[in-house]
Structures are given as structure tokens and as C-alpha cells.
Image (cartoon, rainbow, N blue to C red; front, side, top):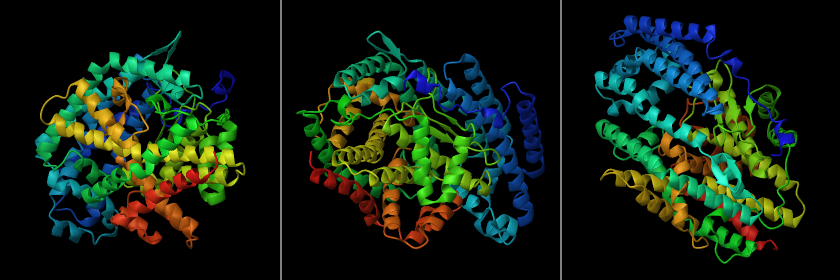
Length: 592
């Protein structure tokens, strides 16, 4: 955004967590957590089987209390680091907190390991105590990993070495991305700012940005390939020891979703590439007057789309208005993010790229990070992240251990918030040309969420499978990347070798392997859910809010049942994909 608008963008105030990195409050919390963790270990280790249900419930409450303190500390460190990953002092603080928290939590590690060793009959008998029955969902989800648990000594070793293993490589990736400068003519831009230029109306600007980004990542591809290979090998070692059947199995269990359901989603989307992305991008090439699209044309605005600058106040009003039209309660929760300093929206050097909603801990509140450039897509991103934030607030009453949702369900409120905002804008548009542009923009967002993320998943799957036979060279990683992009985006595109390095900036591959399908899961789920809402389903809003308030206490089958939906039904995914295809059908019918 222009500098005049940037000054008006909100910045978060992290003092609701701690006053400062060197504050007495933070030091006191760490000392208190350490004392409680040691005392808890001394009083409970080796004794869970003999506890009454009431006593075990008390132990879980104490465990939750200590974990929440540690979660608060790490939330603060993570958010400070996200605000400026190039500041050495913040990097040091983040690493120091990671090491201290890891050391403290080592005293708690016995608890979940010992809980998983309890015999089913012994544990079931304890559920007669109401206090313990409250934690049944958490224990249910914990015991999903029972078959993959290692010896306590090995678990402790892996836990303590995390700070010099995966966490250290992730930090290297973050600091490298944050510190990169992309040279475009006389300018030196951050990666986030350079990527934003791939949506410029001027094709020459997009092309220059595409070449510059490619050159920047090509110059650093050996480092990114090393990070990728190391983390993939690390994952293979852990997966082998834990007896996970495939590289994605751990993620699926964490998401509390069956392998077969995920494969049904991936199969359905992959089979629909021609009906969705191939068909749409053929239309886009025609609209742009191009025989072939280049990679820098993927997010190009359509002719006639001025994509005017949208100020922060207008964006906020638009999103909150859409939320309020659906549910005043939902909007009321969302308004707090704007009335209080819970959002950081200004793009700046060193700041984490993209956007996220950090739940922190239930006793505080979430924070939202955006890089707001004033484009229509940024408004949709605001609607998306606000959905996450509202979801996290509504689920907070479930407590630290049960407020979080699996990734597959965590995207529900965010994608639904996007859909509410888009529908509000579309319903108010009467100009056919503008309506076509809005529909096309929404289709592109949905393709980015569904097709692109499943292509990412296929890339990860092929890369991790190939890594099991030895290190995968940077050139080969690029070949796999270009192959899946060609398959997913279709014949309208002409990819050259320059595009082979664009895998390197995707943070999900580093921070959370196989996370990406959760976006497609959430988008298709919301499409199906929104269709139920449009059908006039009785009491939909109340059921929807109840679903969000449930947090992580219910699985997808139980959450969707009130709406007559079932993700294990093979036809379920088709319903979601039909919504995208229907928008493309409408685009084909509209005059150009």
C-alpha cells in the first residue's frame, strides 16, 4: 500500500502476553512452571495406574496448567520473532525460550507416555469420575499415537534434541527467507513484497518480479535443498522408528482423520484437475489474449480489473458486515480484533510473510498477522484469518488441552468467513463485467486453496518417497515441482526451468510436512457446508457456532452430522468440487 495508508494499518501489542522479553513477569512464569513441572513429576510419575478417576483428573488439570504457562511463553517468543526475523536479539530470545521451555517440558513428558501405557479397561473404569470424563476427548486423541510410542528414554532424547534438530533447521529457513532481498531494477524488495508484484496489472512488472524471484531462489537453492533433504531424512528416521506406514500418516493421525479419507480427497481433486484448473486457466489465457500463460501470469488481474486500493477501514467494515449479516454473535467476537491491538497488518522488512492467526493460550486471546497491501485478495485474507481468530476465541472455553482443532477442521471457520465476505460482495454487484471479475477472482482463490494445495501435497509425497532412496539434488527437486505444477495447472501454462526453484519459499514444507491438504479439506468441507446453509437448513447458525465452540472435543464425523454431511462418503468431496465447477460454468456463460 502507499505509505500514507501504511501508517494507518494496525500493529499488535503483545503486552497482553508479557511486558517485554526481559520482564519480571516472564521470568517468574518460567520459574513457576519449572517448579510445578518438577513437583508434578515427583508426585505423579509411575503412579497413574493406581490413581482414582478423580485423582487422575486433578493430575490432568495440573499438567494443563503448566503446559499453558509454557504455551504462553512460546507464543510470545514466536510472535516477536514473526514480527522481525532479522533482529538478532529476537532470534536469540526465541532460541533461548525454545531451549528453556523444552528443558522444563521434559519433566512433563512422562505423563502422556504413561497415560498411553494404561490398559483400556483400567482407563475406562476411571471414567466413572465426572472430572475425568470431561477429558475423554483429549485422552481419546492422545491414544491415537499409542501404537507409535517409543521407550520413555528414547522419547525424552527426541524431545530434548528437538531444539538442535527440526526446530533449528526451521529457524534457519525462517531467518534466511526474512533476510533475502529480491533485486528488481534499482529496488531491493523482501520476498513478500516481490511475490505481491506477481499480482500486478502490468505484465512487464509481473515478469520482472518472476525473473527476479527465480534468480534470488536459484542463488540460494543449495541451502534450501539442504534444509529440505535434512528435514525429510529426519522425518523418515522418526517415522521408521514409530512404524508409520507412510510419510503422511503422522499428519493424518494428528488431524484425527483416516488415511482413506485423505486419499479419497486427494484422488477426487487430482481427477478433477481438467474440470477445474485446466478449464479455468484456458479461459484466463483467452481473456488475457495470450496463447500460453507463464508462471507470472497465474495471479494476473483480469483485463478491466483495476483492483483499486482498499483502505484498512473499508476492508474491516466489509468483513465485519459480512460476518454480522450471517450472525451478530460471530461479528461481535470478530469486532474485538479491530477494537483492540490484536492485529499486525503492515508489510515491513524482516516480518514473516503471508498471514496467520496465532491462538496463543485460552487465558489471553489470539493475534492475527497479515501483510496488507490493499488488494481485494488482502481483504479475503483478512476475512480468512479473522475466521481463525473467532474460532479460537469461541473454542477457548474448552481449555488449553481441548480448545485446539485438527488442521482439517481448523480451516472451517476461516474458509467460511471468506465465503461469507465474497458472497456479500458478489450479491451486491450488478455490473456484469465486475461480477465476472469477482467470480474469476474467487475461482482463483479456490483453485489456490484446493488444486494448488493438493499439488503441493503430491509434490511432498513424491519428494519424501524419493528421499528414502537417497539425497534428492536441487535440480531433481525442481523437476518434481515442475511436474506436479504442469499436471495441476494444465496445458494453458508454459513452464520453463526458471520456475523449478519456486518450491523453495513454501514454509509449510519446512514447518509442517503434509499440512497442505488441510486447506483443500477445509475448502471442500465449507463448500458443502455453505450449500447446506443456502438450502435454508433449520437452525444452521446455532449449529455452526456450536461446532466452533466444540474446539477439539469432536471428530469430523460427529461435527458434520447435524448438517447431514459425512466426509467419509466418497460423494462428499464431489459436492465441494461441484461448487468450484459451478462458478467456472457461470464464467463460461458470462459475456466477455
